[in-house]
Length: 169
Image 1 (cartoon, rainbow, N blue to C red):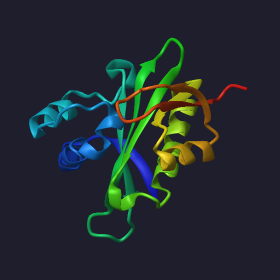
Image 2 (cartoon, one colour):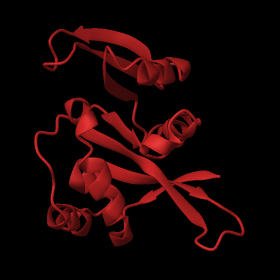
Image 3 (cartoon, one colour):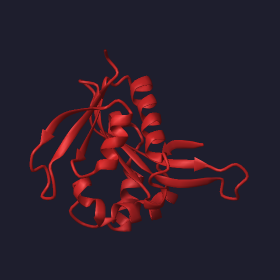
Image 4 (cartoon, rainbow, N blue to C red):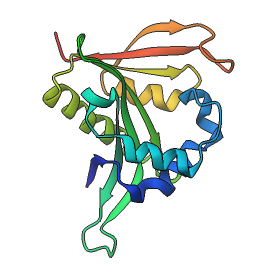
């Protein structure tokens, strides 16, 4: 069973690996590697309260019944660019390379939507996806997000598309 949970100090090795994966830096607007101390400080300073922090990072985890450790870390998912007044936020996600293509992303977005729409009462979620990221675009399309705007020259590598999902009809 896949679930989302708040960051813990034990997540440092995963975050260090994921944040320093240069292959995804253009998608994440990252420009330089992060140190373990940078990430330790981030984990220590985040409250897990989106209203206080303006963002929320959650770990995507699989519970494994009967396993010695009990959980397997699969990736992380974020709500960021949070706008409380207009009740909207952006979604960002990183799935560990060995876990991609297994439905982890879809389940994580589903759980995040339940929280964002059901508990936080957001009215709009959006994701900015590079036009060459076909797998990510297919995921959001399958989850009823609609392409809204093309962002020309969004990065040096490609254009991007804003995908929107509203819980208002």
